[in-house]
Length: 281
Image (cartoon, rainbow, N blue to C red; front, side, top):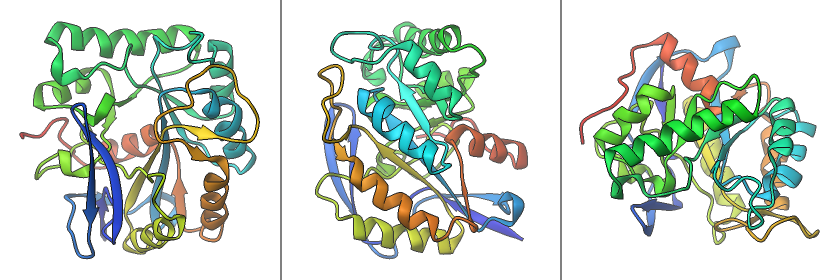
């Protein structure tokens, strides 16, 4: 028996994503079909899969999100802009990210400087992809940096092919940027926007879990009551309470769900079935 890997919610959700440098908002209505990848049943009898990811390597990730997730026994993926780590604006350190990794979380690449890869040369793109991966593996011993988050969700066939040479999987934001095909290097995700009611997100997640889907969530800024190091609170910051509400709800279905870092699930899919590295536009 095979399940369908549906890489986005198919209920009435408002999505916030990026294509190039332009922010876009799309409505995904009931019955909308997002491309699927057929995969064998999820391991250990799990009904569905979920990955929680964070972009931009902000202080809120280190001081708020990671400790909360660790306390709840949830491992997530944190995508680092390596050129920003230890900058005064960013406020995070490599020692802190080594600590996040030691808690069991995945450390992925959000490139070297967060440039729009579709707007730079092939050589510059290669530098952004390869040097960020190398920096992570140098600064966090034991890390295998196998996942990438495209800045601005921007990529094309050449960029996906370049990513496939270095990473196991690469993630977008807005599922509408990928055309008709899905690959492990064009993984859509859902970004709960600030104006997006948590109740609607949970309704959509439950519908996706009932279908046996893999859902990837993308957060940027995470904020709390206390002041944090650095000035970068992140794009579209979400209060830590929203993450608490999500985790509380997930706990009710914990036995049914495989909640794991994006790279771990992607690696399982890659080993379980043939998934093309890059699909034509």
